[in-house]
Length: 157
Image (spheres, one colour):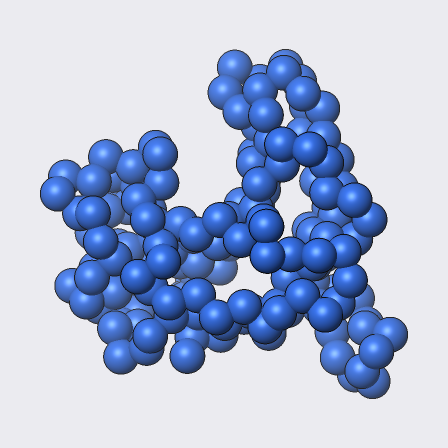
């Protein structure tokens, strides 16, 4: 955690990343939070409309790097079918004025790795049991990328 220079006692998290060039898939890193210690306990977030957050990059974001916010419904994770995500890379700037972003649940789409089994929309049935949200930084295969992404004030609205 780092303290913001703009607002006293305002803190934010920094995700420093180094994505190598030796991966057989596009390299990625990230951070996530469960809603309870293991064993996993899901939460009903269906009464909310989406997620708000602030996010920015410290310095320049390398070409080809994308930043995603992901929601993992319990039903999809239990069967290894994936998660829903929203790419907010283009919304970020390299200062702390980036956000807050308001991301409605309708803006989340199945990830490219998701085997949706008919789940094309993040609907109330999936939102009634969510076990984690995460921030993922994705690079390009064969390219080294490094940088820092900061985020704060993540909340359901």
